[in-house]
Image (cartoon, rainbow, N blue to C red; front, side, top):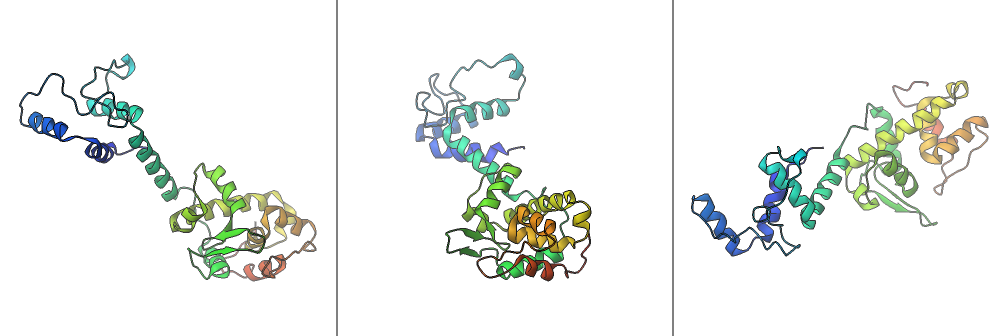
Length: 246
């Protein structure tokens, strides 16, 4: 992923630059010389920017053809903790905003599921009596979010998930695709059931629960803390418009 380094460099440089450094830059911009020993920051202070203009760094041959700003950017990132942290945070935000995993998931099903789980409230937050917490429009629990983190290779907290509709959309897209793969693996047995009905069963009872529901012909039918049975969700969501079998 391409990082726009200019605003990051500007931000860190402004934060760490001394008054003398600013004066030196002003002189340079006017074409005037500055003292031989001057540099942007103290090269012995690791908490500051890192002296990309003052140090005579030996650049490896394979990167010697880089333009000045590319070299400077690489050196600064390697030596400056605050900039590295800023870049890491930007990477994280970009990953959360990505919609590449969403795909074309049935909008009617998603809307009805969100309405059933939270009345469509993306910031909904509930904790069961057993201490398990569920958040977001579709009410994802920590176990399922942990699977999403691994599958999508991004890290986020439950609070970050709750406060990011775009992240919720991305996790939802992965969630349904993962369920669909499990439905396809059921083969002929899965074909006897309605696809959206099975999606809803898997959302409520997990993929293992959905498999048991199908394998038992609906005899495996536990309920959640709110009293909703797997069969209730199957019946409710199998009537969603635009439904189709596997």
